[in-house]
Image (cartoon, rainbow, N blue to C red; front, side):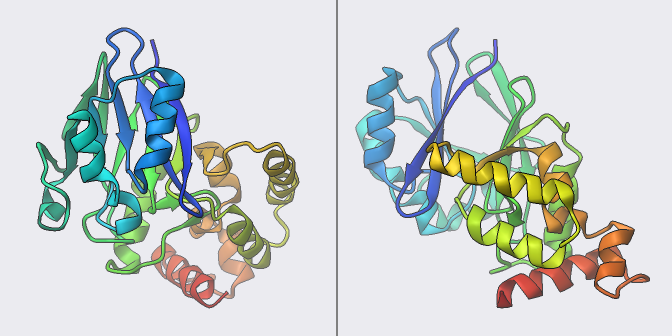
Length: 255
């Protein structure tokens, strides 16, 4: 039975996510920007928190972790490489490690770029990937610590997941990201259709930080950096894919 997932808006544009295994009752949260919204969702669902999964060390993803641990006794999981700047970990993780949420096993992916210690969690049975500030809806995170080569390698790793994987990102930057995407990929009909659908979804109050990997591949300019069309559009016909990605990321930084 797949995990049940709830997206939780936090702060101005962050998202946390609850994962619940109906068979065992085990429940995890991915990132804790703020305690109150997580407690509210736990109260609404009646789920009891058992685990806290951390993607990276930025305060807007871990600010509520210690308070939530004090309130619930949940075990904290995070990157071994970043343990020195994370809350105290019961479980330190690296590429290839796994996380069991009840009957389902999640796989840890190292996805440096936004930060050097960023990790993602992929739950294949439930077709969910929690990518936080690496792969985002129609975008990717700013390179605060990593290099373009690191981020491109990370995005390629995420692109290798099954197309029906739901990408659950750490922020709703959808309006700014799609505006940029239109500016660098102006002839993309699927992107135009996505923007129209997003307007309807936003008006209906649907979560804006979750999308299928297939849709991201079709409309996210950073995932399209290796396409001949994108290279031609930007006068980089003979450039390596990573150089096209770096060009797009630099444009986004100035957008």
